[in-house]
Structures are given as structure tokens and as C-alpha cells.
Image (cartoon, rainbow, N blue to C red; front, top):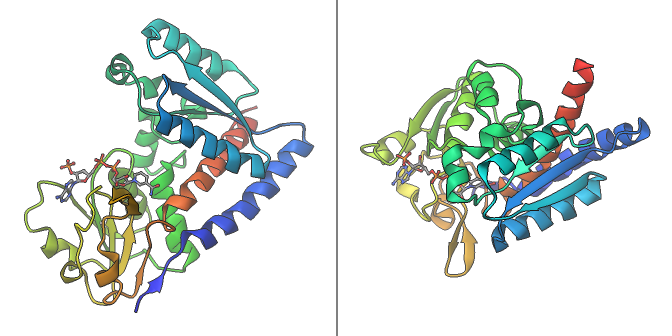
Length: 283
Ligand code: NAP
């Protein structure tokens, strides 16, 4: 039976670092502050904003919640984001989905100043990731790397297969793995014979959004499986991997829930603190 790679231990380890850093900033008179921007009244976005606020409060991080009208004009939206950009008391901006159609079309995320882009989603920060420079990295991919490091799972030289190539998960994750000298293969919906690739993976990472897409016949014996997927199936949260069968074949596997997901908000907090640090370096 595989070792279960729980995210909680990783999250707790990061929390210690976060609380210590926040304490030092508060001593210096800086209250780390994240601005969470929502557009319209989406209950899921509201629940997510509330859960971030609750977690960040524990760390001593302040949250400014802004709820913009769902019919906000493009000019007013850009103006609001620009004001947050120049506000010295705000260190990071988190723009939640869903956005209105015209804001999606506008690629509204690109109006976040890169220095406050704590999710690492602006083209500037994604470009730096591509170039191998230090910057804000998207939270979920970074959470995966933290998890591997915490459990002392070597990355260098490993044959890593990433299933999923989204701009927020699969692609940046592949680049982070490449930076850590893994040999990376990226699979997606047009991959022919997915099993051929997944079976070869020393470390298999799955970010698709389809429950049970990975079964025990698709994994390498004694491999490592990182399940990033989150799906609601029959009212229960499940991953992309058929956990019950796969856990009997591999060396280690993340559970869902309780795996990568719990680490991501801690990465968001660390990125916020990094934004303050980078700002101090500039001054
Ligand atoms: P996404 O934007 O929908 O991307 C899904 C990816 O899966 C796409 O690249 C798609 O390929 C690929 N795919 C779809 N069907 C496939 C198939 N049959 N075989 C191989 N690849 C296939 O989703 P996402 O935002 O990356 O999220 C992926 C999953 O991770 C979701 O379950 C999401 O809820 C979860 N997630 C979890 C966290 C966390 O904190 N744990 C954070 C973010 C996301 P194409 O590019 O060819 O369409």
C-alpha cells in the first residue's frame, strides 16, 4: 500500500514560515494586505473569498474585499484596478473568476500590475517563468513542488508526465519541473494512447478535471502519483485518479481532498509576502 502524501503536513510547515514573516513585517509597521476582487454575486467566488479571509486572518494578513458590479464598464474596471495598483497599503491583488463576458474578453487579469500579481497569471510573470527567472509562480503548480520537496521526493532526472496543459496548472507546472531538471512530457485531450505515456512516469501529475481518468493499469509500479484534479461526484469531492485501485500499485500518492489543494492558499500567502519583499528591494 502506498505512502499517502497528505497536504496538511506541508501546509502546517509553510504556516510556521508565513506567521514568522508576517510578524516581522508588522513589527516594521507593514500590515501585509491582500485585495480580493469579485465581479458580481457568484456564491462560489464569495465562499472562496470568505475562506481565504478566514485562513489569512490566522496568519495576521489583512484582506480587503472589493465586490464590483457585474455590469461594470471596462473603463471603470481598469480604473479600479489601476487605483489598487498604486495603493501602497495593498500588496497583492487577487481577481476571482467568474468574470463578466466583456471582462473575460478583455483578458482582465492582464491589468493587474505584475508586482502585485500574487497568482502569477499576468503575461509578464508567465514570461519570466518561461525564461527561468524568479517571479510569482501560479499557486497550484508551486504547491505541487512544495509537496514533493517536503516529502523529499527527488525531481531531477526523473521522468515526469503532466496530464493537462492549462495556463494556470499544467503548463506552468511543466516549466517549474523543467527548471528542476526533470524530463517532462505533457499530455492533453489530443494525446493518442495516454496510457503509453502515463505508464512510463516516475512521477505522474494529473490536472484534467475528469474523475477516474487514471486507473491502476495506467501507472508505473512503484511510481509517484500527484492528483491535482478536483471534481464533485455524487456530492463528494474526488480527484482525477482512481485512488482506491492506484494506491495498491504505486509507492506514494496524494489524496483528494487533503492533498495539493490545502497547500495552495499557503502559497498565495507566501506570494503576497514575496510581493512586499520585492517592493522593499526596489525602494
Ligand atoms: P482545464 O483548464 O479544464 O484544463 C484541463 C486540461 O486537461 C486541458 O489541458 C485538457 O486538454 C486536458 N484534458 C481534458 N481531457 C483530457 C483527456 N481525456 N486526456 C488527457 N487530457 C485531457 O482545467 P485546469 O484549470 O487545469 O484544472 C484541472 C483540474 O485541476 C480540475 O479538476 C480543477 O478543479 C483542478 N484544480 C485544482 C486546484 C487545486 O488547488 N487542487 C487548482 C486548480 C485546478 P486540452 O488542452 O487539449 O483541452
